[in-house]
Length: 305
Image (cartoon, rainbow, N blue to C red):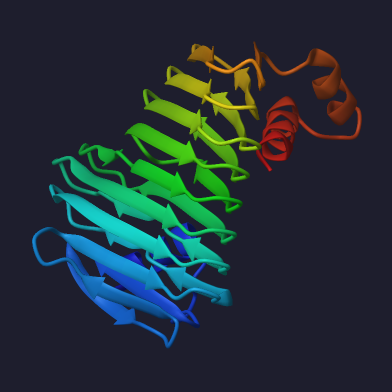
């Protein structure tokens, strides 16, 4: 990998060297390295671009990294990755994609991930998106995620996109069996004329299933954001969605809450708040010696943590 690709890899996966455990690194549409372990097997798909990741039942305290980096202007790809997590696992999966585009053509990566999570398994999934480059070509990322959770499983998803991505359309769907628990934490910032659409559709199908989908975002300059979250309760369950956004400059934000209860035992809650940075916060920090711009950055950084 060249210097640019290594820098992007650090941004999206916090990797400075080859990671411990299983990994699959993809660079400009080709494999840049792969390793399986005794408990985590990574294989290429036969009929499509992508990989299958199979984690043996009972695997605990292990990780798998599957980052993607693009540094070639005009490259467009769609990749299909399937994760099969066995019963009683406790693992961390780190994904993410970074694009460096210094050319005139658009670069695009569409990653379709499916998770099949066994009974009582626990998964922490981290997905970071990052873009850079001074070319006229756009940096486009369209992630699709499907989650199928068996009884008493748990998944925490951390979805982060802070800068550099011109256009993104995220579609996430999840189906939860009895006792399954899903936590989604989205952190998003757009600037310039960027556009970001996040759609979450969660079905709570079993008794005791629960979901907590929370988005924190900042829209700067002339950027646009849409947060569309739908939680459907088909059994006695608990669902919560929350959108908390800061709007600046000429940004635009649309929050679309949807709750559907198909069982009298379904408890569903939605919260949404969109507003500018509070003046008293700015004044307080400025009295401590910060400029207005520095105070804004301090508030935004704290808000998105």
